[in-house]
Image (cartoon, rainbow, N blue to C red):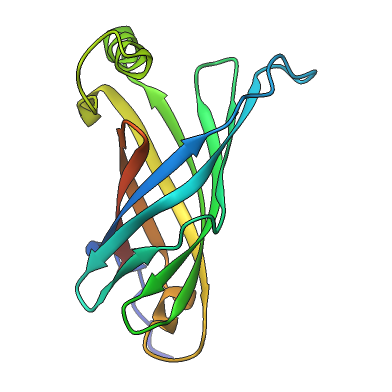
Amino acid sequence: MADNPPFRPIEPKLEFCFEVRVKFYRTPKIENLPRHGDRGYVGVEGGHFEGPGIKGKVVPNSGGDYAYFRPDGVTSFEALYLLEEDDGTRILLNNHGYSWFRDEAAEAEWKEIESGKKEGTAVDPAGYYMRTFPTFETSKGKHDWLTRTVIVGSGARELGGNVIRYYKVM
């Protein structure tokens, strides 16, 4: 019996999928949780998304982002809201991820922008980490590839919202 060469997994590559720009409205936090940290919620105000073969809007008031602000400076979040493709297809996006500042200067700059003490709408993404691992639900058809493809995202903070670029893991 001849020896079969060992099979090796294919090294993953990333392929751009689409970009989402989502606007949020803020609500008060629950502070000083018994397990430590704080819990926050921001509701979806609206937005849009676009990529090769896919384009549409973020459905206003269709969900939000629940963030757990951990004592170690990491924000762990779960966002759940609807996208609506220009063809009418509704897509439920369930986004999990982590965000944290890489250095104190970037964190201080963001706090000044948020408080209105400094002009600006964003902090350079090199100053913090924001990565996501979403799942999707949608009807059978043109966009159901989202329900069977591993997708990852890289995000940037903007005043009042986020921009996240999603990539298929090929």
